[in-house]
Length: 91
Image 1 (spheres, helix red, strand yellow):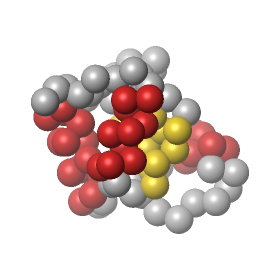
Image 2 (cartoon, one colour; image 1 turned 30 degrees about the vertical axis):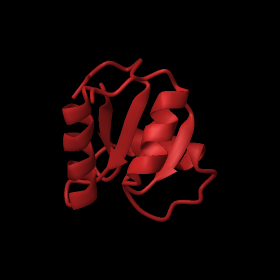
Image 3 (cartoon, rainbow, N blue to C red; image 1 turned 135 degrees about the vertical axis):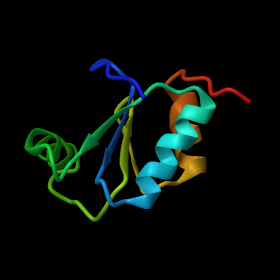
């Protein structure tokens, strides 16, 4: 996981979300740097997510890939967003 604030991939998650953990492992496997923000422990992260979603929150994970918001652990949508952002996952 990357701690860089300039990362192109941000996972908004919770500690209890199995899909959030699985997505993080998948991104690590692909060699994609990301930042993971816990919306229950970090009020600023929760506000940031709500602002990006215009208050329309329905669950985690929500992943911001260079401005493209992907709801849930949707591998095809995540791959498309990463490729569009110029991120090249390892094969």
